[in-house]
Image 1: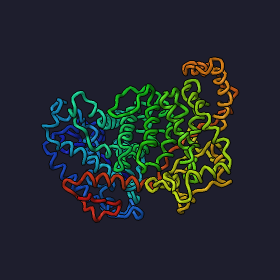
Image 2: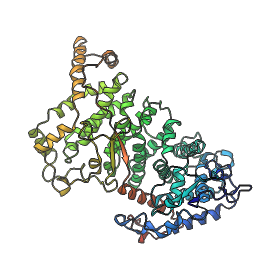
Image 3: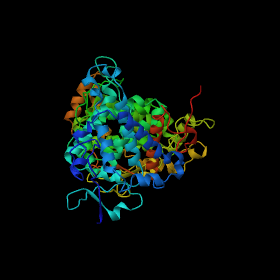
Length: 599
């Protein structure tokens, strides 16, 4: 026999009547998942024991960590691990079938105050154990394989390869539309609880699930491992249902330095999704959800929600998020060619970001600081070239701030040196260092440039491609990294001009600024904004702009550095959530630093 069976009995060990070896018993949408909670306390202790047994990575330095080194984990995720399918589907069903709004007494308000939280704790631990089991080893093969009895199996030659992980294989091979829909609905229901629990008519009447970070890790693992799941949620579901809780968590956590990891993983998920064309198209759905936060009022789409959220993080977020600025702008750049109608709020905020990043404070903070401007210009170019008719608000915002674009286009070396020395005297270091921006957390984040059809684009052949793995990694040696302040040079200015695609915006301004000036002259300077927008609607830019450039989409590419970051983040969450009572000795942990509170 050249195959190892993956079907080893019912999902629920307490189930009756299950035909042993039947693949139908190991599906995601198993009604037996809602089993009795009589033994929840016992299950909790068993899961805590599993966490303690799988904690090898905690005691290995990050720079020495090897995901294949743990002998215990190699046995735990082996193809012949006892009851592995039963454990996988039980953990998965326990998590995704949970409904926080109906967790006790049929959803009666405040019933959670009188009910035991034992099952909630079981859900949290199930999510943690599942994340741990899915973290080690190598990615699973998503191509299904069955024997002559139509049972799921793994080929022996594949199962005994170094790094094989049966749990990652099972996650990768979930291919039933019903199962994928159950997974998606579970993630949406649990993640939406983060803001729905605060949106109730009666204050604190609905319990809030605290394991949202584990859920985000599990969502990320599913997106990475199962290509069918990514395609399913983008083509057959309303992916905006996931976008709203992601933006809410990022927005509310932006100032909390303890939640930097949360903002990172939400960013990675959005970056992963934004690499697909259908995601950009889906974001045009109107946004009508009321969120319990101080989000600026706007009337627009989910694309507006993302851009307003990312703008707020940049201008009013933790300094430790500086390393994500390029990722934020890459996300917006990816979906900008499909953004049919930008709201007034989004238009103003994106142009404000251009003014911010073109100011001496940011432009001269590092040798590569202009990369943010290149991404913003690409966003403007995408919208002007492909979605001009529905985006008069952005066009008008650009016309109003024409001086900011003009100053950048006419920048000379003497002027750049003068502005730099005036902003940063020799005795003063830049407050914002674009080159040394805490990139250790996102070290060597790889982003591949592709066209609309997913074909790789060579940087040498495409002048609009301004971000690659080397830029976002921020791993190059720069002047600011040596302790000396950056000083503009002729080579730097030449590189800046070559990197900034200003031609489209310049031609737009050359044609529209005289139109606005003429209107102002005819009406003695008193012109209503609505009149200008109406004029812009009637103007066509065909033949006036450069030939439309190719659409460039930047896709996330996994690598060993981001894998280590996810491992450290996951174990950090598990460690912090396992303190009552504590499972691990914080003084012996080497994967990350544990800072004790001062008493």
